Image (tube, rainbow, N blue to C red; front, side, top):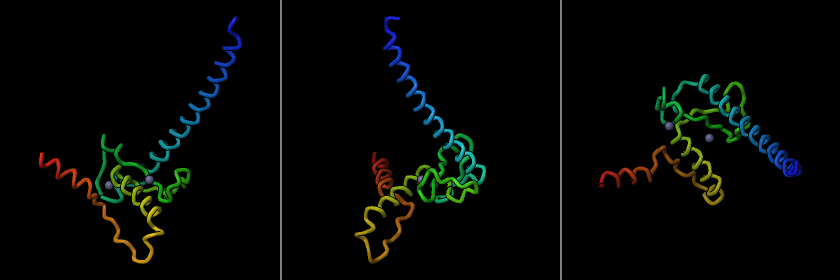
Length: 130
Ligand SMILES: [Zn+2]
Ligand SMILES: [Zn+2]
């Protein structure tokens, strides 16, 4: 009873944590839901490199939002694209590149970077030498 005020504080913090946990859970739930929906809608193939995913590997297949808005989840899946984690990564860095360098690179359209990653090739080369 002596620590009533402290208990009050603790409860307040606890309540906030509960709210945060709930928001987080809702977000996770929503992401899980759209992923599951996308996996039901589309064949389990990466839209970029065409690799197929099944079983344990399926978790490497991620849902990409075409307009990069994770809150835009139309039920027909028109904003979704299934991409493997590598192509997904690539997609986002390309998007950023365009955002950052687009203004300076006016004029000639730049040769689109293929799904090829120069640095992963380099890494592979270095690996072979070891
Ligand atoms: Zn891929
Ligand atoms: Zn994405």
